[in-house]
Every structure is written in C-alpha cells, then in structure tokens.
Amino acid sequence: MAIRIAISMGDPSGIGAEVTARALARLRGALVPYVYGDAAVFAAAARRARLALPTVALGEALPAGGALVEVTRLARAAALPGKPARAGGPAQLAYFEAAYQAVASGAADALCTAPVSKAQVQLADRHFVGHTEWLEARTGAPRSVMMLAGRRLRVALVTNHLQLARVPRAVSAGGLLQTLTVTAAAMRGDFGIAKPRLAVCAMNPHAGEGGAFGDEERRLVAPALARARRLGLDASGPYPADSVFGRAAAGEFDAVIALYHDQGLIPVKLLDAVLSDAAVNVTLGLPIVRTSPDHGVAYDLAGKWKASEKSMMAALALAAQLAARRRRARRHAAATARAGGSAAGRGR
Image 1: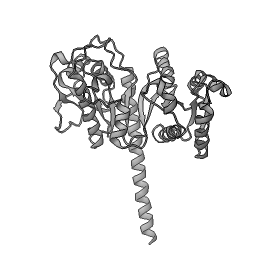
Image 2: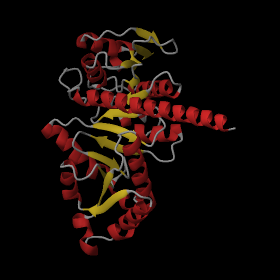
Image 3: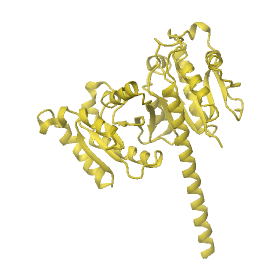
Image 4: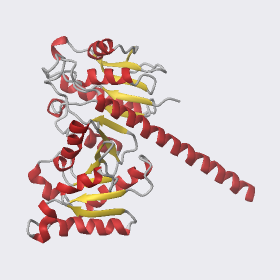
C-alpha cells in the first residue's frame, strides 16, 4: 500500500503551492498526496506543473489516488504572489490544522508542511511560534526536536526559534539530555542507525577555552554528556562549532546536536546551497511523521516559477521513507505479539 502524505500548502502568497506541485509532478506514483490548501491557488500551480489531482471539499471522502482538499477559496486579492494579505494568516493555519487532522485520524500516514509566514499566522494565533512547537503541544509529545537532515549532515537543535540573547538561560543540562535521548531514539527507529554517534556543539568559541570564554561547556554540556553515556548513548563533545560540522559531514558522526538555531542551521543550508545537498526539516519525538522543506515562503520568488522544488521533493521522499519504516515496525511488533500469544497458549 502506497504511503499517503497530507501536505499543508503553506502561505498562499508564497512559493508553497508551486514547489509542492512541481515536486509531486516529479514524484508521480511514489506516494499518494492529499494537498490541503486553497482551491484556486493550488489548482493554478498544478496546471502549470502538469499535475492532475481531483478537488474535494474538506470533510469529503478522500480519493484513493490523492486529491487537492479545498480548505479555502480566497479572493484573488488575498492570494497575490509575493504580497501577503491579512486573510492569508488564518488560511495557512487552517491548511496546517486540516492536514494534521488527516494524519491524526489515520486518513494519511505522514505530514509534510510547506512554508508558512509565522508573522502572518500569528494574526490568527498570536501564540504560534512554528510548526514544531505547535505539533509538540497538539500531540502531547513530552519533547520534540527540530532536525535538519541532508545526505551529508544531520543537525538537531536544543533550542528552536528563540532570541539569541535568551539562549544561554534556555539551555540546560536536562534539556540537552532530552535532546540527546530523543535524537538517538529517532536515529535508531526512524533512520535505521543501530548505534548512532552523536556530537554536541559547544556554546562558546573554542569550546570555552578552559573557561576563558565561558563556563557553559563545563557547567551544562559535560554533565548532560556524562548522563547520556551512562544511559548507553554514544555521545561526545563539547566540540567547537567551527569544526565539528565538517567532521560530521565527512562521516565521523551520524548527527550533531546544536545548542541554538543559527549555530546548527547555517552549516546545513550552506551544504544545501553550495553542494546541492537538499535538506529536510524533520520533527523528532512525535507520534506522527512530519517533514518540511528547509526554506521559507520566499515572497521575492513567488509567482516567478523560479523557486527550486528539490527540498520539497526531499521532504516528501523522507516523509514516505520514515512512514514506511514505522509501518514495518508496527507490523513486526504485531506479528511478534501474535507469535508470543500463540506460544503462551500452546504452553498452557
């Protein structure tokens, strides 16, 4: 059975519709897409990409081969390329919520989210910080972790969308340990790496230089690493951030744990831009599979048909891969449970 992916269209004035339509046209047959978005905006992108999807209303039965699910039908002035309108904020949130519900209800196997404008979405929900935080709260996950994953580099974050000035107080030994355990579990269960090698970034230049540039490495990072190793994790560091990513990209580590957003995402996106290593934003620690491309709404490119679909393709492919692995794991667990029950019955 093909993997069914619920896709939220993202900002109707951004590049979400066009990169999604082009990616699906190139991945034709590899998955079953259900695109939750605006009927007119996505239909126009689909026509240009030569992608044929039937349109159904939200709440109708989903066709077996995929569909555009009409969540909104915005006025043209509210969905102009590159010109966000107030109505676009609530629309983006509505697409996201509807796509999530499809996965939560079992109508889809994985969630892939096209880029949103956080500023626009906050017009509908002033507490909205990002997809990752919203999904952690909605699913009740004890801890989720934002990871950007490419072919050469995987980077997980201890803190996500947070002012840099607040990072030193937000990073704690306990939070770092949680990030390590969630990342290790995802590497094993979702990525199939039996004993993942995790490297942890230092917060300060030269890993603090023995305390000359700060004591966070000794006070926060070292205790978390010691506890992680006692739990059996292959975790090491703290490593200077100016060198550890190169070592990981060369194959020495399976994932790097960065302490804050730009520390971790700059190297991943540099590899993406320079070496065409399309990266994917994947949320670890959730009961569902969720991926996203590694870029934003790109208002400057919207409507010009110049935005690259490679990251969206990678996001869709990874969502299908992770969902398929989870499906196999569930089947294996069920078969093992049945076999155990049968053996117990024979023993009575």
